[in-house]
Image 1 (cartoon, one colour):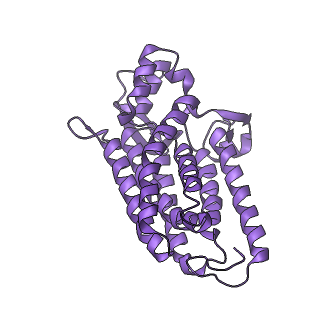
Image 2 (cartoon, rainbow, N blue to C red):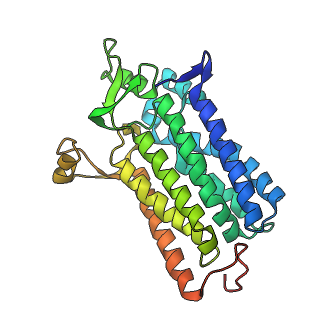
Image 3 (tube, rainbow, N blue to C red):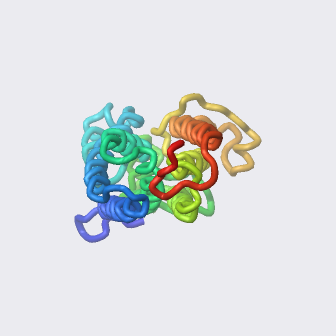
Length: 291
């Protein structure tokens, strides 16, 4: 991979900027389609970006505190945010907080519908930044990719003694960044296809929570960055072996998998509850009085 696009310019940083631009342009265009105040939505999006930056980095450092906060070199690496190391779920949380603050200016459920495809598109671009930086890497796999010696994966395993100078990089590993990027593209396309067929205000947002939760849960099974942590380690020897891992490699339940389960449950409850009180399709602006 190529951590630097040009000398001194980190590829990860460029991809994060492109992801933010993709999300902002997308949500602005969709806001007009959904009958929202485009200027208010743009203001909201511009507020989300710095907040997501801070929160997603803070969550990543908190999850990997043993690596980042137990040595001076780790602290310096935590401050070097331009090299990668952000947690999307922290950014997702920041988007929810800002949308809640703007609920008096725009209808919250309709705003979330407009934001859902935009989040997926921005996330698809951002995950490619993770690929170039070598963060969010996958488990070892003979048919996978090799992350460079400048990658976060290689630097991490240098500290554990598993990466050695004679190695070309870290790997081969599952390209989990590509898995998640492609999954987000499919989610965005599915949501865009359903824009004119939503049955209640918040329908697209609820579907996004279900689809992304399922995607992230599955991708997490192939993730190999240990600093993510587990809520509880569940050993399934037969499944682990079928996936090509060691029989006693824990496949469940990482912190992100637990959050993913919560997203799926909330999304399904939202859809189930709203489906009972809605009938037919609603306008793009969500003018159905029952919503």
